Length: 278
Image (cartoon, rainbow, N blue to C red; front, side, top):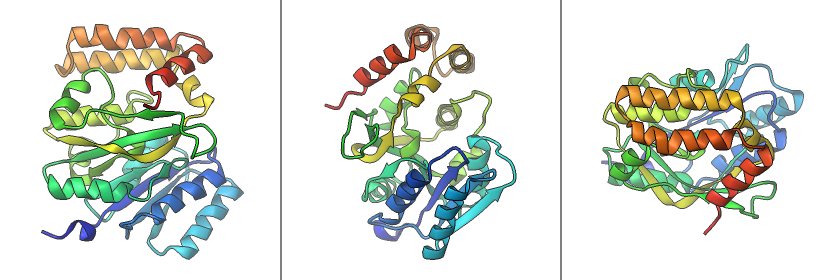
């Protein structure tokens, strides 16, 4: 077996025209600063980009020969972009990265260590730190169950992995059908449950591995009638599939629907209280 440092992995990121160029640059630089660097960084441009975003992408291409840019003619949504990008990834281990977050320097090293120690794992995520404007001003933390059994139980009520900080096996993702946008904004949760149903195992690194931007607009997207409807549909699917029980539905989905219908300011306070650091 190769040493942990010699396990190769790809990085998969998608960007579209509404992202900010400065955030994209910071996100990509955090990947290029990893203690165990990648030799395959796949960036999917989901439709035409702004001049500012294109300038960042072009500059990164000139300075990093491991960067492989895939440009799509039209914006097709995150799930579609990630499926396309995944097909271009050269390695089985793939680190997901959003275009506005910041990976800590040892993020991938920590995750590779888990795959090296537990080769049966298919999904490895970790704790993320939340910030609004300044990365060094952490406002909250999302820490999830660590071991496979606890993760499986937790998944019946809540998303068991922090998607922006996930590293997974390409073959396991594709075997489960890849990303599917049937449940809008629940694409990753839907994928994890299908993978777990197929026998995949997961692990969450307890230490922080990534800093995630959490602007007020994020809480707004997690509210409203449409979001609540998609949430109910997704949890109903979990019950129909036998993954979750009716009690899981009553104690998780229904209270969250109530939060969705609350004013954005109140919903933001609730999320911040749940993710308060420490």
